[in-house]
Image (tube, rainbow, N blue to C red; front, side, top):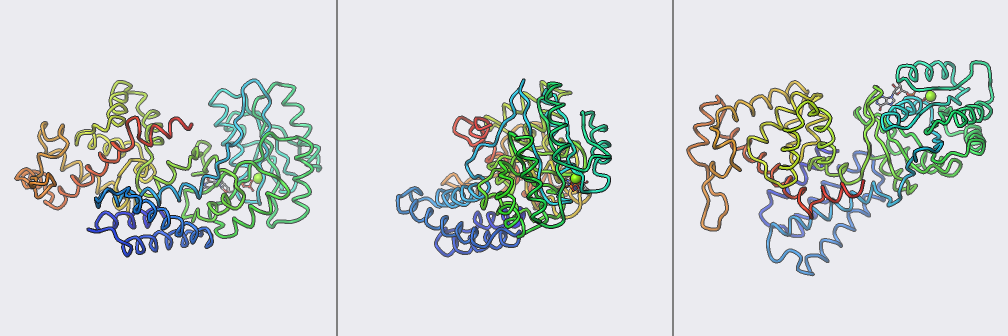
Length: 457
Ligand code: GDP
Ligand code: MG
């Protein structure tokens, strides 16, 4: 989905004039990409209509001030905002409070990833200083308690369950009562699923819910269930009034669009994404960074968090980088460092998708192919002089009277020859650097969306 959307938006940048025809074509591409990822048809056609109306109104109001570049950003922003609307129901999810027993109940069909997600959640909250534990109220699936026991032990979190008790309601209340007494702060109740949405399952959920009175019920949805997600969301909403959604298996070839439709259908926010089978494969979800990542605009927030994690070894460097990113003052040298960081961080595809303006087509193919492409970029920067590296790239360009870049200087040829690459590749790198620097500039600063995102969280 991401690649298709960013390709569609890139074509917007290439169009010399932004007229109704360009807008229509672009919207068609965006909608096709959304439909293909299983976003509900009605939602997609609504989005199309809304973007059209919005853009028209803005053009008529003169928001473009007669400039094509402004027209471009009007269109881009309209699409961006409407996509954000899709995953943002405007509802604040419950936030666990310290020094208080926060009961969280997970529901969802069998195999959607409830048990795995419960452990991930416990680890997440434990890391943030909440005394966390898991209650296994799944008496339906054989070996369910063993699964909880194993993963909870691995995660070093407390757990409760029974091999003999067959009443899930009784186990749930026993466990929650016990952990409340022991002053646990996050008590996660894992329930059983069924293969289908059966009345028996819904009855059981209502009973457990009445017994443990959860502060938050989470619907766990598998990203790969496609269009079925919407109906599933609605059915669960009726009996277990969940207040949050976690979408799992986002690391696979899943078409997350179904889950997006479930959000819209139930007006419930996604709080986390499951991105792998390991205990730490849980990403916090926020609508704006999610969509900018989808559009190839990077996830500055996520990137900053990740850089923070890995650069703990070099705090000075890290501070400097974050400051530059915020001020929008990134040089080619910084861009080079970003590439190098990405290569050291691995897995490539995950990290690279967080970097603003990081060309999504560089991620095409396998991680090995991507690494090779990035290595070539490093060779190119290796052939640059210190002055060139510290510049914003304008020394590689000639400019016309109107101040717009017109051509390339001899430096490009020299770097291409020196690095054993081609003029085209050097040009491409400069182009990618520009995109990234512009993105960072837009993202940073007082009025940038990065600031807005940070305030939001
Ligand atoms: P439950 O029946 O809802 O409790 O589902 P489980 O937690 O037992 O998970 C079912 C399968 O999905 C297991 O093999 C998990 O390892 C796998 N799984 C869960 N979450 C993720 C995820 O985010 N990514 C991947 N790749 N696999 C996951
Ligand atoms: Mg389970």
